[in-house]
Image 1 (cartoon, rainbow, N blue to C red):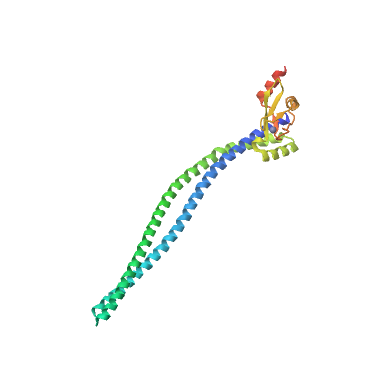
Image 2: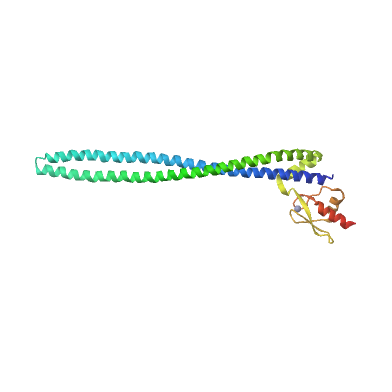
Length: 251
Ligand SMILES: [Zn+2]
């Protein structure tokens, strides 16, 4: 087997491995996204609960104040009943009216706080509903991830064994160069040669579309010589069909 054919095997097996791993990462990514959404909902719930607590305390304060004022008003009414002079009575009446206004103010403030608390309670219910829904989605996402994991695990192990076998056949320094190329270029580490026009000897790199000289094609045809595209540096190869076509043409 020529070095190009060896590399092509490594490339194709490695590509399948990377594709499987990327589908697993996708499933994991989706699961992570759902997890983060739930965490955000929980964080918001904590904030709302704290606000609710604070609002309840403020409302209780206003209610307490209204009660204190009411007690004072009760006292004033008694004093008015026992007033000795009209002047004294009028003075109590003025104070009673002031107290009445203050009591109303405190009651209104308490009601406002309660309305705000109702809004927060509604938000809490809404958050809870959303959480239930997200949890369902997370459950589905977890199942999907586990299923993908199960599907892939066996296949991945087989491919890794196959890769180890393919790799063992490749000369060491060629392999080091090639692995670096895969790290940098991924699926474009190798590219097929496209036959543009056979009669006019026009060939392109299938990755970057730049012209490939006839000598490079001949080198591949004769002994599978290691050939890089001079433009994008991918390792060129001929598909089996194209190789047969070109050999057929040479008869
Ligand atoms: Zn190229």
